[in-house]
Image (tube, rainbow, N blue to C red; front, side, top):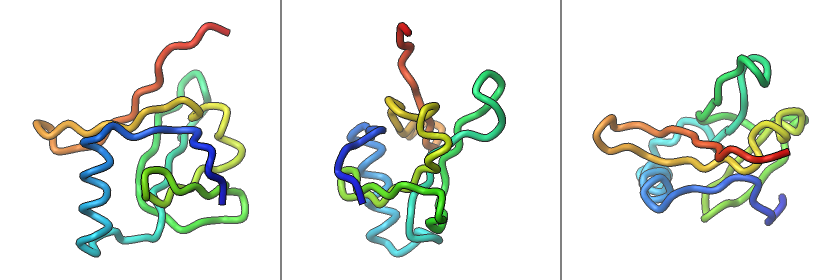
Length: 98
């Protein structure tokens, strides 16, 4: 398990995820962050899942996270937020100059 955080959580996202964990309503042991589809036409994925042999495991703000090693390039720098009005999580990746 790594301590370097490739992603981050806003305070409200962290509070909501901790609540899910503490209430025992997390259906799988990890929060999965990743991409579905390609980098240009892909969409971010956030859900609950098991760890696989392809995953790196992190403990970020006391939240157990897995990220597929093959998707790391696409998700590094992503911030996970929570919108109480929409009652949902969303992922935001700031634009970077490369």
